[in-house]
Length: 419
Image 1 (cartoon, rainbow, N blue to C red):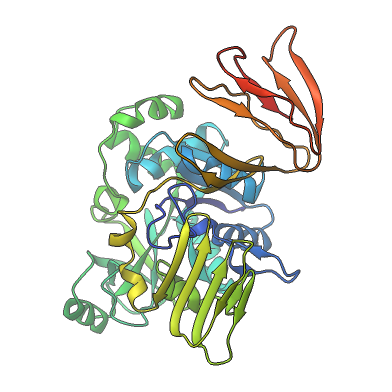
Image 2: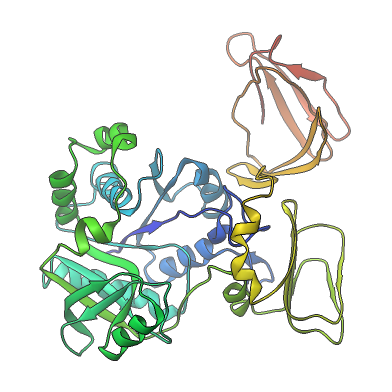
């Protein structure tokens, strides 16, 4: 039986500033080197590994509207996407994704579904474990199956699952919320596992839970009512109330790369981009997305990162406190990956903004218009077609390098697009 996997893609761009922003969350940052020398992101790595374990796997992404373009950019057009109209926490997101699988993708009520985050740093064995979790759910041994990570230290960042017995698969005795340090030590002494947010169930089970807790008829109706739903996590709404629940232990590599310190631990090299690292640097990682070179000399235990959003120079230990400082920095999105290519702000003035758009071969922007600004297009390289006022009698012409067709203002031109 093929895998039905829902990857939860959420988060904001605070803890890994300046590489991340409100559109480009950590799972889309390309830091993992491929064999061909290029780089891939966490979500690309996750998607590729799932496909290698099961080429027939049906993979869907549950995400917000703001991330749809970057997902298509990085994973292509074939991946299924369950779009959340707004943020309502994990239970509404999983309920909507389940209805999407059943009503749109045609997944049967008896088929198992695995739900997991899209951004942990894991090894190949993790993906084999996802298949085993799916098989456990399909077997009917429990209504809900969860994956518990064998802890490597008493963490205060994760919730805990307490198994009722030893063994690879066990009934669940209790769930524990994120504890203080002493409580975490006590939980681990009792054999507790990290709650990784990985669940498996039969599709019909989650449909029943969704209908019992939410008032809707089908996927389209739930989507239309989504903004009116109460925010609630899957743990509170389902997992902690379910009596027929099993946990499967996973004793392999699993990391949450949520801070610069943990992210750099997963990097296979110390520098990415145009970087010169001095001879006397120790435990220093530099990521440069700008064209200008960065020279780093004599630093120890530090991270340096530069992007159109800004520049970070930080001690690795201090980097975990970045969020409170970034909240006071202008949050204008300076870089984004779109379904058609990339968007990069080059310069901002009081009355103008210069943007460099790079279109992928064969791609095109959607038609758009502006209420109160003039748009001037200059083609730096390549050849494409510009369409003005689409519809009967639309005007269009071919644009090539060096061409500046003319200023386009919505006051005289309703809409324009580039193809």
